[in-house]
Image (cartoon, rainbow, N blue to C red; front, side, top):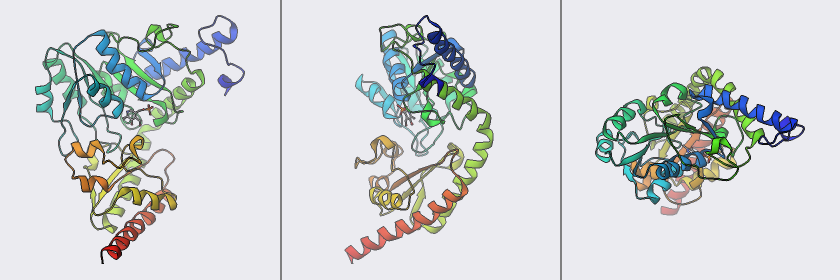
Length: 358
Ligand code: PLP
């Protein structure tokens, strides 16, 4: 709050109020560096995950022209930039993990960036980043490795696991901060061109007056999240498992899209036979269960998710997908409410479809 009211100085200025804002930025940079396993000078504050991802892709391309490679299940913030410049898209297994032999085929000395997310935002599936990094270093020696850790940060030790990547994106609103603030870690050895130029903030890597209040809040959220992470992983995965077991045992024709042990603790992802998720989401919302069919950015568009398509799920099953995300605010009572609402909603939709067909 002080950075929205009494300490509302421009951190690039010279007077006392500006210096206070700048000091707050420095302290936040140290916290983000510590939680992300980076040096303070390697932290670039951005306006969220999309900007960090775009900066990783376009900034690398500008600094070192070459071919770009990413997986077929990346968030659109990576996938679309890579597609736009004609990059190579690597397929995934049915499990949602990148096909490592196909990755090797896509690599080569002409590749300047490989971008593989740490955990998927729809399914929670975790990629084997250490194995991927080893392949990239061997078969694409001129490439930087970027990982979109936006979804992973709350559930995986990104400081450790992400240390094999040259570039790492996170976004504050995924771990208790506000929307519109994020970080791209740019390791000392990596050279990424600025996407916004002007005032030279962030050591010339991202011009524009920083969102001081948002950045201070992000750092506070990150240190709180990291100190509670182990506890939350245990608590939330137990709730998630209870939710999934409950739905699978009460709703015939429900399928868990990927094995639980291969994903982050917070995501329950299901597909229902003969159900259209749009109608399901409508009924669930009436029961105050707020869920999503695919990535929230594409909810409402009647196209099955590109992630499920890449995993080889049929279009029909893809249309009946449901993503339930849990978090630090999720309690047992929420799970019980979802467990009451989901079977009832599916039954209601199937009964009305039977009525129409009969
Ligand atoms: N990458 C992943 C994996 C995400 O889940 C999201 C947002 O949901 C983004 C990138 C985009 O981040 P932001 O919404 O902060 O722009």
